[in-house]
Length: 360
Image 1 (cartoon, rainbow, N blue to C red):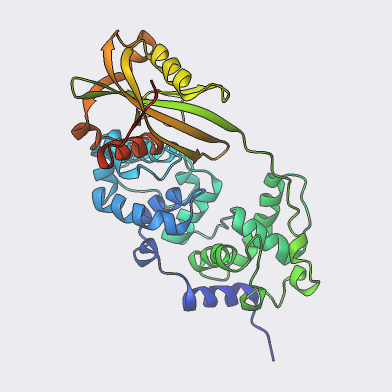
Image 2 (cartoon, rainbow, N blue to C red):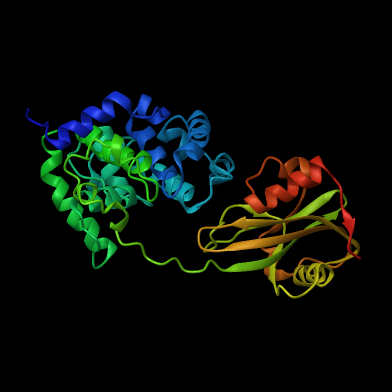
């Protein structure tokens, strides 16, 4: 019996049993664009509610272009990697201003926009416009490395180029949207970094690693570097019913978000000294200092343990280094502005629980 060629087989497999996602129900260029940006370094299960909320608030590129960045940040709050929403907002304004709101159709044109790299451009163009260009991300790279039995490449970029060259003639004979999404789906659900589900994979007939029982050898895993762990102190400082908040300035990974003042401290100092160090940093003085909450928070390349306190302003003015991006705001206003995940957790603890322990 003639075995169906694998590009056709995986597209048929995808059409028959792919996961349901809101952007797949309506694969318009706008929806695919928003989803692909959100999916960068983020799981589908996390993205779905954010996507639904985002497109409800900003249903098209004109709505996003006309919105304030702060409004977009508020809807995005908690999804992380905030440069993504900044780039979306900037790109929307460019599209609305230069192209009359018409979104690009080719991967080359998508790559002229902020925040769009080769993979994202290829994914959007192939899924929404049918361009026959392979989209190779980390999942696809792993799938095809195992498929071909490639143990290692000199660099990640050379590996991606190699896989793109291999897939380019394959995608010409099938639906490019289904083909790219099939490979993404295999990587996300079957050809996992660990605990693979090879018996369910539509590529198992030709997969060299599967035939040679070498799935766990491909691709070669690089040793992970130890993740740095830092200590930080944060302060909810109130004055006449308002709290001091600062806006993260340009160049910071949380640019555009508001926060309670935070400071990285030596992990050996106690809570009292850490709180006083933060007050000294702000230029303010207070009476009693109360502990609010301690918790860990992970970023992409490091993690922090945050000790948060609350206190009431007694005297002093906010130092110039902060005054350019600081203001006093009531809790009712803070609820409606975009905040970092760390400060939002402190805010919710203050407003929902209100339990504190005196430090000083």
